Amino acid sequence: MENQQDYRILIVDDAPENIDILGSILHSYKKSVALNGEKALKLVAGPNVPDLILLDIMMPGMDGFEVCRRLKADPKTKDIPVIFITAKNSVEDETMGLELGAVDFLPKPISPPVVLARVKNQLELLQARADLIKQNRQLSERNTYITDSINYAKRIQTAILPDLQRFRQLFPNSFLIYQPKDIVSGDFYWCGETGNIKIVAAADCTGHGVPGAFMSLIGNTLLNEIIYSERILDPGEILRALDQGIADELNKDKGSETLDGMDITICILNTETGILTYSGANRPLFYFTEQGFNEIKGDHKSIGDNKKKLDYQTYTLNLSEIKSFYLFTDGFIDQLNANNEKFGTRQFRELLLQIQGMHADEQKSRLGEAHKRHMDKEPQLDDITIIGIINN
Image (cartoon, rainbow, N blue to C red):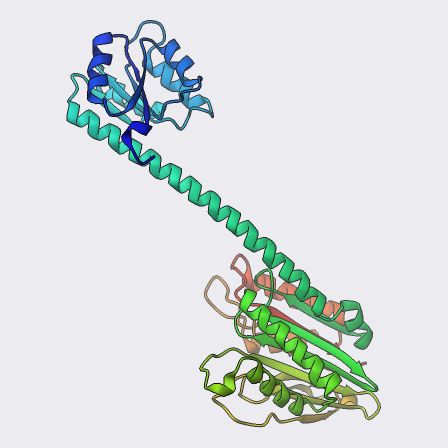
């Protein structure tokens, strides 16, 4: 309320002269009066609900303490501020009044300036509380709208990601761990097939949440165009084309300094020749042979980084020599525990070594359990994607 006259104050006192005094002090406000507690409660329950109550304690019948107790017990009236104005001015009386829920306690005889100041302060607090409630309601409505929109975006992102059944058809003894930090994810995975060629990729876009999700949609679309329309099937050339595609989409060739892009691992399996080819943009490939663990680090250039100019290298491996291989983003490794310690690459590598020889589903379970133990009650910090393919 902008004006004082918009507020209504209920004055409760069994002495009419006291009501007259308070009424003259508060002449700028709308007022209701009651000579006893019962009448006060009836007025509060009526159409003209007061914004503030000035309440005497010593009254015949129901005293002020009981009136306050009943007001605070009723959900409809519990938020109406009550100021006791009374001749009972002991510490015990004041303590009881405040414990019952009164906002202030003024002893008689009263000082008009003090009464005005205390009333003004409480009405300002009342208005501030009303403004806060209104703002919270607006924020809640806005948050609901945004959350609904993001949930719909999740449906779109989920529809674009490869179907898990399709993924398992292409790679029967495999697993996928895909855990977005937020509702939508900046990580995405991709798989496809053309002739005797099977392709799989795991990508980590700049950021997470909505910005990362938008980038993941661009990356997914570009991979489809590069592989199926342009028929590029060399991993290094795919990344080069993806890098150029991101630059074109985001106008980075015009001198933009934005750092939007992605880190990505891509592998291509040729089932006819028994060859696996790999290329990585800031992401490695982990794989195991009979001799143990191996790593190819990939190239130190994110897709979309227009500050670096290099060709992505393609690495060739013999599938018959590989027991298993893993594509992953950095969310799993970079997760912190309660001691601010990362899960770490070494622990991840040792864990992969321990689960070699297990079925893909068991490997997925072991990885999930280890990560959960490490994270404990700490929040997930980033999107997580791990693809493990067991080469039977």
